[in-house]
Image 1 (cartoon, rainbow, N blue to C red):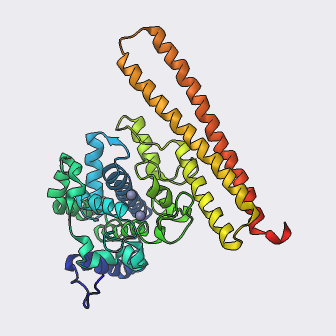
Image 2 (image 1 turned 60 degrees about the horizontal axis):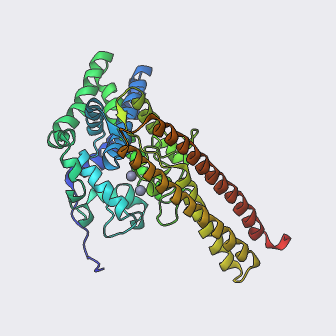
Image 3 (image 1 turned 45 degrees about the horizontal axis):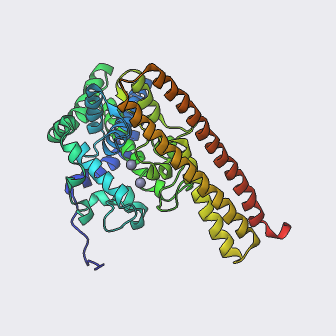
Length: 391
Ligand SMILES: [Zn+2]
Ligand SMILES: [Zn+2]
C-alpha cells in the first residue's frame, strides 16, 4: 500500500468531544468537588445515566441493531435509540454500519475502521479524530437499518436528541436536586467521558489483552476485567466468532448485564427471538482451537513427536462427532419441515414426532458430552507435552 506523507485532517467537532470534554472533566469535576462537594444523590444519578447510556449502546446499537441478536418491541427501540443518542457515539445507522465493517474486515488495516493492527491508541479513539479513508460512510451493509423507522428517526434528529439527553436532562435534574452546575458536571460531563472510554475499550484493549478460547483467526480476546467495565462486552473473542448471540458472556456467572437486560426485557414481553448459539457449536469451536494449538506446539517442539499420532486420532474422533451432529441437525430440520407440511395431520403423528424429537435431543446431549470428555483428554495430552522432561 502506498504510504501517504501527511495525515488526514482532523474532525474539529470530534476534537471538541474527545479531547476538550475529557480535559474539561479532568479539571472541572475535581475543582467543583473540592470547592463545593457533591451529594450521594448526584453520584447515584451519574451511575444511573452511565448504565442507561452504556446498555443502550451495548444492548441497542450493538446487539440489537448491528447484530440482530434479538427483536425488540417499538417502545424498547425508541428507549434504546434515545439513550443511545445520549452516549454521543453517532447515530445508530453510522455506528452499526461501521461496526458491521469491523466484523467483516476485522484486523484489515485498510478496511476495518478501528483495526487493532493500527495500534491501541488508533483503535481506542485515534480513528475518530481524523478523516481517515476507512471512515467513509457506506450504508450498503445497513439497508435493513435504513428501512427501520426508529433508526431513521434517530438519524435525522440526532443532534436535537443528543442535546436533549446530554444537556437538557442533566440540567433539569440539577434543578430538581438544587445544584445545577454540580449535577451537570457529574451527570452530564463526567458520565459522558467515562462512558466513552469504557465503550472504546472494546475496540482497543479487548483486541490485545485476554485469552482466545474460541478462535485464533482474529485479534479479539475474552477478558473478565474488561467485561466488568464494558457492560459485559469483554467476552470479545466469543463475540467475534458468534456475533449474533444475544449473550457475550455465555456462562451464568459471566458478568454480562447486557444479556441480563435483554433476558429481562424478553420476560416483560419487550424482546423476542433471542439468538442463542447451540452449546455443541460452542464446544466445537473451543476444541477446534485447542487442536490447532496442540498441533502447532507439538510440531514446533519436536516434529514427529509420538503424541502427534494420538492427537490425530483424537482429531478423527472429533470430526466424527461433528459429522454425526451435522447429520442429526439436518434430520431435525427435515422433521420440522415434514411436521409443517403435515400440519393438518393426525394427533398420533404429532405424538410420534414428539417422541422422535426427544430421542434426537438425547443423542445431541450424548454428543455434547463426548466433546466435553474429549476436551479433558486433550488437556491431559497437552500436559504431557508441556513437561516432556518428566514424562
Ligand atoms: Zn472487535
Ligand atoms: Zn459486534
